[in-house]
Length: 172
Image (cartoon, rainbow, N blue to C red; front, side, top):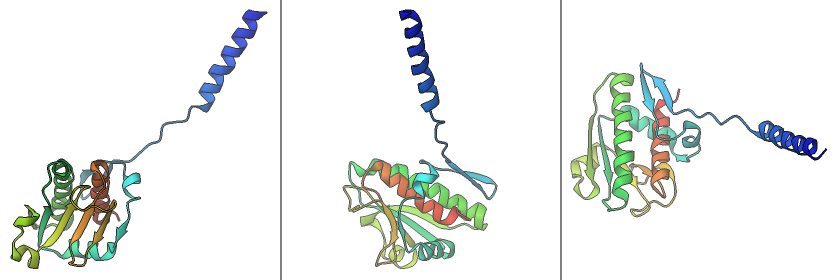
């Protein structure tokens, strides 16, 4: 009798475990557009949650510019995050210009202190901010100078904000 009771209990536990198991969530990391795949560092569903202020103005700036400068304030800790987010953002943006708009845009990256007056006056400036270089939250916005700010309170959040920036110009 004890054996049957033990088998019954084990059977119920196993059954309950199987019933309560949920199918793993499926995330999207790729947008296929312009005949190429844009691969994101984070699930697009998560990046979509990052707030964007002045999205229409940011999109207009991206669609009409002829010169882009990505910039950052150098910091020994944040520089790693800037490399990850910066290379990813530059790659997506340059592919968008070539394959999506059929044009080349003068793109470059400069440390903030090395931006020229010409860049400040004639380029679309995209500034990356990390936790040690002025990020106050995780977001994308257009600042009072007309610069596009991509900021994150730690490395993961900066890559989420960079992915959210890409969604501005890659979404239909």
